[in-house]
Structure formats: C-alpha cells, structure tokens
Image (tube, helix red, strand yellow):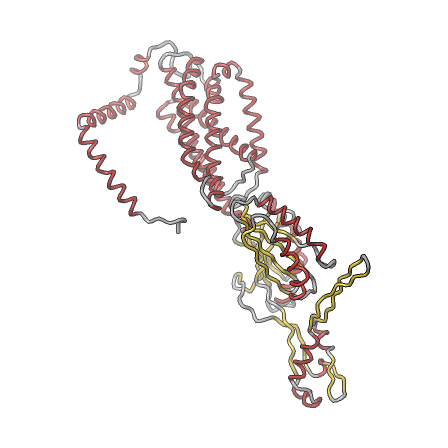
Length: 558
C-alpha cells in the first residue's frame, strides 16, 4: 500500500490538501460552548395568560394540560406552579429516555389539549433542558445617574418589557433570565381626617377593596354545535381602578380616591443585584446549543448599541462571559501545539540531525489536528472545554506517531536502503505497532462513554476527541508522512545509500555513542544484580497498594 501511495504522490497530496481545506472551513462553523450539548431529561411547559388570575389559570388551563401530559411515556415526575398571568409545568423523565422523542410527544399532548383550553389562551410552549442552558454571560443594566430623571423602577420596566423581549427575538439567544427587578404593589394610604368627616372606617375600605377585587371565574355556554368560553373578571390592576371604587355610606355614594391616596410603589425586595456598587438589573443570556459564541456576541453587541443610543441614561455592561474562558482554552491548545512543534523541531535536530525531518513531523501534526476538526463536524461535536482537553492530550500522542515513523524510515536509510525502499519498509513495519498502540490508548478512555448519568454523557466528548485525534494521526502517519518524507528528502540530505549498517554506526556522533554506552552500563548493572533489583521492585508494590487504599475518594474534585 505504501509503495502504491509513493507512486501516486500527487494524488495523495491533493487529497489531503482538499481535506485540510474542508477542515479549515468546518472549524469556523463549529458551535462553541462551555459544555457539550447534553440533553437533560427535563422538559418545561410554559403557560401564559395575560390578565388571568392564578386560580382561573389553574382550573381552565393547567389542570386539563396536566391530564394530557401525564400520559407521556417515560415520565418520572410532574410538577406545576401557577401564578397570576403565567404557569410552569415541569416534567422529569427517567434517565435514558430519548428526550427528542419525549419532546415531540409533549408537543403532541399540548396540541391534543388545545381543544379543551380557552380560545384566548396562547398555545403553551415546551422547552427542552440542556447542559448548554448555563448562561454564557450576564448583562448588567445600571443607571448612570441614580438621581437623574429616570428612576430604577422605570429602568426595571424597560429591562423586563423591552430589552428582554428584544434579546429573546435574536435567533442566537434561547432565553433570557432576569433578576433584580423589584415587584410592584398598589399602596392605599387613607386620609384619616377625611375619613372621619365622611364617617368611613378602615374596615369599610378593606371591605370595598375585597368586594371589588374578585375573580368569579369562567363558564362554558353551549349553543347547539357551538361552545363558548365566557370569562368574568373584576380584578384591580391600576391606580385608577382603585381610586374609582364606589362606597355606599349613609345613603351617599363616594369614591375611594376622595379620602385615600393610591400610588404604585416598589414591593419590599427580598434581595438586590449590585454591579460596581450600584443597584442593577441582571439579565442572564442563554444561547442556543447549535449557535456559535461569536455569532451570539455580534448579535448581542448590536442590540446593546441600539439600546445604549436609545436610552443614554442606562449603562449596559457584560460580565462573567464564557467567551473569555473558551478563548483561554483554545489559545492554550494553540500554545501547546506551537510549543510541541518547537520541541519536536529541537529534539529532531539534536537526535536526528535533520531540519527536514523536523519540518515533516510538524506538518503532519498540523494536518492531523485539522482532520480532527473535520471529524468534529461530521459527528456533530462542538468545541468545548471537555473536547478541547481531549484534543490537547491527542496532540501529544500525534507527535509520538509522527516521530516514530520518521525515525524508523531514517533507520532503514542508515542500513543502506534506498529512499523508496526505506519509506516503504519503515512505514510497513510501524503500521501494526502504531495501530495496537492507538487501540490500547483508546481502550483506556472508552469506559468514560459507559459512565452512568450525565457525567458519562459529558466526558464522552473527551473520549471522542482522543479517538478522533489518534485516528487522524494514524492515517496521516501511514499515508501522508512517507510521501512527505520522500518528497523532502533526497540523496544529498540523508545518509548516502549503499553503505552498510556498521559503517553508518561508526559515523554516529560522540554524544550518541556516549548515550548508548551509558545505557549499556546501566543494563549490565541491573542484570548483574537482577535478584536485588526484582526484590526491591516487588517491595514497592504493597506500599503502592496501601497508599492507593488510603487515598481519599470523591465523585468530583473540590
């Protein structure tokens, strides 16, 4: 096979060049995230009902929807939480259930329940949880001048009703979670003097507020083949509603606003969100798992610029961005690759005394890394911390494969073989050992795939990265590397062909001969004292076992 490749060198170079170009193109399109896109067996159904109380929403929407969702296969637990205007139904699936199929089934149950829901209710939305639901960054909104024209309550309304909705409209952003927004409450402050003059007591005010803030509920009216859902509501929602409440006292009809001050104020907060010592509204940005971090950052920067121009009183700041961590990880990989190439070049110059061999090894490593990214794209693996950690390990093993093949071909040339025969014999001799070495290395990481729970799903990316890197390195080592060696080496650059092995060994440098002599003396010492050497080695085994048993064991590092 190697001889056939050497006879078709141009075809091999062009084939690898095409794959390198594809790898570079696919690298720019790979999704980038902090963690792998792992489906968590959890599905959330979001129900919205504007101007609908919690009791009515529970009776008319959540209850019939729960009946349908309880029929979903593989359902482990279902919970619901209802509040005025919205409700959340959480479904926890048994681990191992295909969440994609469960997500489709949940949507089918929602469609089946729509016939029994009020016509005014928007279709509930199902959201599938994923490991990428961790916020990629946080957007902080603070007032530039806390004593200016805009109040914190006004900024909170802008953040909740305008900024949040605009961000969620971006195709790269999946969801925005907002914190630090104070709740609003209608405050009624009685004027005791006016109340005394009108003969109204505090109990009269409480009775009037209670009687005018009721939710009778809804009813279904049937007319032949038609069915109508009628909702009757009498909830207080604004300052004007409270001020216009009528009171009947001593035959007189009065309004509550005549002897009480009604205002919209902040609810007593249970906590604060601070940024640079200022009270802030924090928006946690969660991106879609299929989107890249760069595309999301560009869309987010464009939106922030638009709001900064529109609301100059508000300052927008990005904090806790995963982009910095990912950039550090990717730059770490690039640094390791560059350092590896430099070290390979230095080692080859010292031991092989050939700059061409150093260049060949470095070029093969670069091609192997690019082919690994092509495999990432083909198997839908994202660039994340786990996959990058595996790729860093694979790069070190790629260096070993390239050095071994190059050194073996060089040894055959030292033995007097021609350039073509040295490339063929040197590569053929290493095909089986390199394959067995790669398989044994992969076998160490295969158990990561079979780990139970989400941990196994996460670390499978590391196992894939190492497997893909070794596979790419192996293919490059037995196909492209001998072709590159044949093209870059010539009769003048290496050992002259036709000389015997003994004559070449005699021409080895003094440093090489001294290293071999030191190794020989060490081996002679071990063989002369073989029983002492074996006994000392065996004595360390029980010590290592005891130390292993005394080691602290935990699932995750601190």
